[in-house]
Amino acid sequence: MPTNQRQPIDEQRDQPPRRPARRRWALGAAAAVALVGVGGLVVRWRSAAAEDPRLRFPPPELDDPDVVVVSADNADLELEPGRDYVIQMPDEPLDVEGGLQITGGDDVVLIGGEIRFSRLYDGDLRRTNRGLLLRDQTGTVHVEGLFIGGALTEGINLSESDGATVQLQNVRIETVTGSEDTNHADLIQTWAGPSRLLIDGLSGSTEYQGFFLLPNQHYDGPTPEGFELHDIDLVGLEGSRYLLWVDGPTPFPITVEGVWVEPAGDRRGDRGQYLWWTGDPDEDPWVDIRVGRPPDGEFVGPGDAGIGYVSPGYR
Image 1 (cartoon, one colour):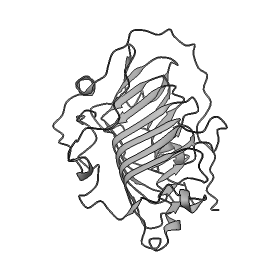
Image 2 (tube, one colour):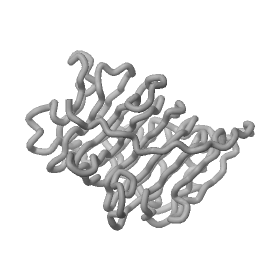
Image 3 (tube, helix red, strand yellow):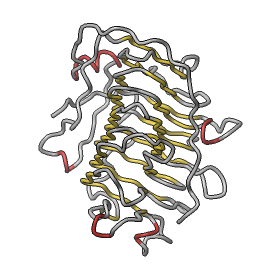
Image 4 (spheres, one colour):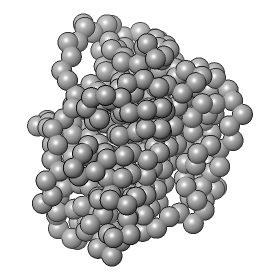
């Protein structure tokens, strides 16, 4: 087994007391657009959604949410447990050491925005040039239309040991840089939870790994209810390794639909070199993975996410 079992890079935080529940309101597509701003972005939809371009997973209903405006001075967010939040990204790319970090909160919604590093920051590259860290939410985290790029060494990290559902939709993560001898770059890594990981529309490329999915690696709580991966294309550049990783036998269901991987040329001839699975071959969750690139192009192209993103709505 490859020696790639890394230690988690999150930290324990003190949590303030829980607040009582309040009235609820629905964050529909129009409300979401109003909160993040309207731009001239036109989303190019993929053939898999040609008949219905709306997304599979709507945002959660929010309970009297607080709106938090992200800036270079306010990118390490400490949210109160039990409260709902709308995270509003700035109207210019966020370029700050550590990227965007969101700790705590119940239901959390982020729609649109861009995280782009102009340089490599000094220090631990697992943290300094990581795009997004989601940690310790208790409800549903909805991230949609987010662009992550630039001098990127880690994409999205999940440390969700409190039963959260994480929804990632129409997300683009440009090349994460790393190697076996330096930082082990991942497009998405989870070492604790979430209970449910729901992805609908994600494109990314990597110099090392793609999705590193070990939800109980450093968490001895319940196994996930299930992961769903829809309309995803991952490209492994020269020197890259596993584009999809899960240890088997997996105790939780994984749904895969319309997922494409393009391994590096030296690995293309050996499926086990880019799709990691240690369980029964008859239960291999990657059996329906398509090798190559989607015939109609990336699911989430360079102009399909970021500043000015407008949601197509939800099924």
